[in-house]
Length: 96
Picture 1 (cartoon, rainbow, N blue to C red):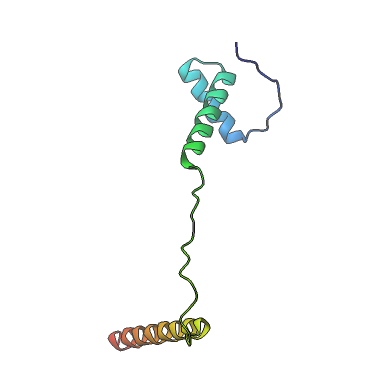
Picture 2 (cartoon, rainbow, N blue to C red; picture 1 turned 135 degrees about the horizontal axis):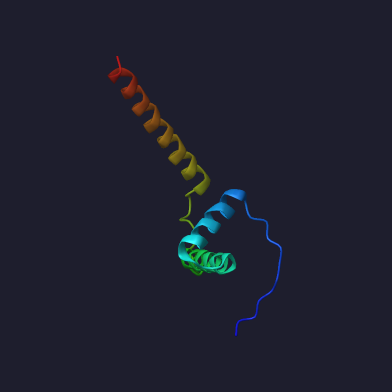
């Protein structure tokens, strides 16, 4: 025997209409249909949220002597800007 608890639940009017219509169509009590819908929804939600994954980062060690990683990131940013501007210039000339 499954234990139950009485509670007050506020359900939007449009959902109440759908649930009542379905309960009539399926010849099932409203309460049973709501419980079934909640169980299915929760089960589907749990299936869509897999357990978290643990990732261990790899230690690449220290950067080689003389290599400034901050400057390397700046260089990457500059190259990306140049690439973007080059593509934008090509798009402008193609549209004329």
